[in-house]
Image 1 (cartoon, helix red, strand yellow):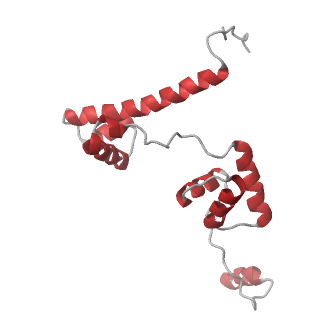
Image 2 (spheres, helix red, strand yellow; image 1 turned 90 degrees about the vertical axis):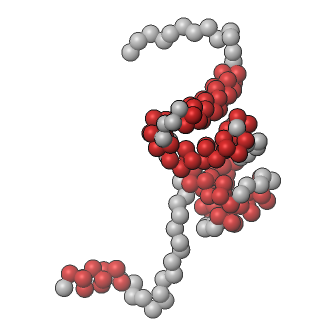
Image 3 (cartoon, rainbow, N blue to C red; image 1 turned 45 degrees about the vertical axis):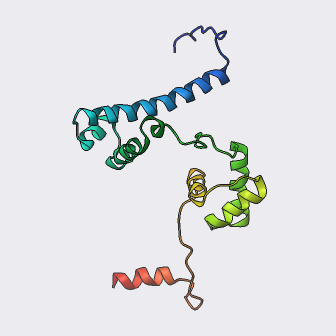
Length: 162
């Protein structure tokens, strides 16, 4: 293991550094879109340009639509899509506990819970993304037939071997 390097921390705080990184990440996304449009100006196919940039063809077509709709202005992120969650990590942890404790199985109920508990509004699609990030999966609840024997799975395995 090597020595810990010496770094001058007089230039920026950790917070300032992270803010600058976030801004540049945003700028890189816009730059990639401009590279894509530049390729199209130079008669490179959408498929070829997408492969070069490591994006899907659907993303490429979306970028082209954005460009055709309004040029440079439409390639930047939309207002309100800051990439920052409206819920803090602590609130997400609390949400996760509430979901488990109350056995909430519906995205719609989670949406209502977030609005009521944290006074934050999301779309149902964004709630589904949050649930996925919290490691909740999609599964339809299934009903168990009331007259089903307790050892139904064992009986099924036994009968399928015969």
